[in-house]
Length: 44
Image (tube, rainbow, N blue to C red; front, side):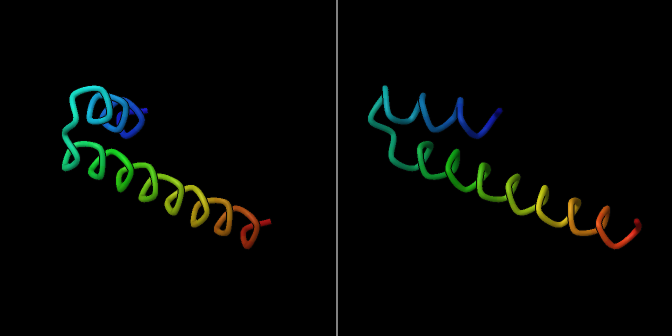
């Protein structure tokens, strides 16, 4: 959620750095979810 907020704020204010940081946070969160789902699959 934080990443989306940062990205939106960056878009609204024209702050490319903040927008990219928000996008990176989203990608990091998505990767974390994939790893967790993989762990769950292996555990069952």
